[in-house]
Image 1 (tube, rainbow, N blue to C red):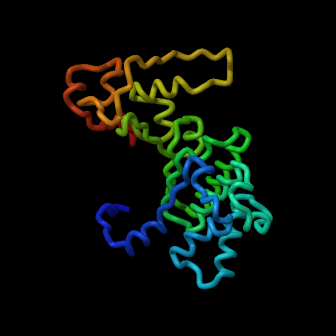
Image 2 (tube, one colour):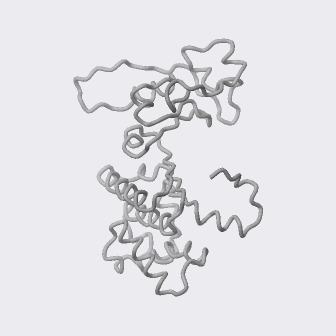
Length: 245
């Protein structure tokens, strides 16, 4: 919302900000405290933010969060511990915890990558339903273009910590303008074995993200590299309406 959050040193202001921003971690086996019950895991942010005035009100919010993730009846899960749940159920709890405060902004770091393919789509659909319900902004970190296309309105492609292309999802996927984006899309499996696509191969070594090369970070692997690429870090330029590379 245009506010530089790095300039908020006061704990009270940071606490208020945290209510508006939540994260869903990748690994449901590491992100949940094994010594806390499912009730306590979801209720913890409610308590920290002093949202409710009674334990009954907190309980109602926790149950609603579990029901939103189709963990019904919620009473069956409230006093279980993470080790008693499957990976999919654990991630549902993690999602419920993130959404229980109805934040303005949620970051999801590969939230389904460690789950079986059979339940990925179901959990992703529940997340999308909650996004529509709460009207929050959603930053989805993924390497899977198929899921990004299904989930996101806009896509930003990063290489070694720098955005190399961004735009509306369909524009980036149908009209990729950066060679790295082209290579990523070419690597997406196609279900039709008879389909033919142009193979895009990225040659060269991947530089260290700790010590990236000068200039454009893709210059060690780019087929269009020139002297300027090695000396200058390029600015994003508009190649279409709201499409930059």
